[in-house]
Amino acid sequence: MAEKQQRDAERTRAELLATATTVFAEMGYSGARVDEIAERTRTTKRMIYYYFGGKEQLYLAVLENAYRGIRDAEQALHVDDLDPLDALRALAERTFDHHLEHTDFIRLVSIENIHRGEFIRRLDSLRDLAQPAKDLLDEVLTRGRAAGVVRDDVDALDVHLVISAFCVFQVANRHTFGYLFDVDLAERADHLRTVVGDVVVGWLQQR
Image (cartoon, rainbow, N blue to C red; front, side):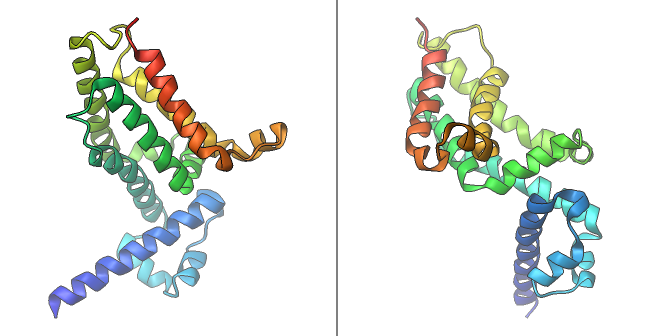
């Protein structure tokens, strides 16, 4: 009985978190209302406060969960046995796919930057969460340099920035870019996935 109650509680919390992610991504922190989240999940404000404590705590939980998603996706991609350049391509393409599949994550990041990182600064856990992503890139770059196939004048943060910039842009700016150039970036996803891999490998490859 206790185990079932725990499973039900975990399921309820996950459902609230998923709906809150959508609402905060659509309306931002200021515009989102706990009443709206309660209505969409057919629950009550009291239940939300029971699980999260309040609107701010719920938003922080949404942010942490969103960042945990991309970190988990990176760690789930096993690249130890891949050639270093193939590993870098795989990491770039996996980041591209994750961003395309989790557009709410990009919207949340954009909103948080509009607010100059006001809330993310309260989540020290995210720095610890980000470290394995840097460590993974460091390990691949080190292997690549030892094999003589990767240039030695860039570091993991450079690579992470380039991949993130491309992958975030194709989601965050799809509507403005699409209107200006009369193109649907979503329809070009397969091509753009290849492009980001080519860009990263071409840039990092030792000449």
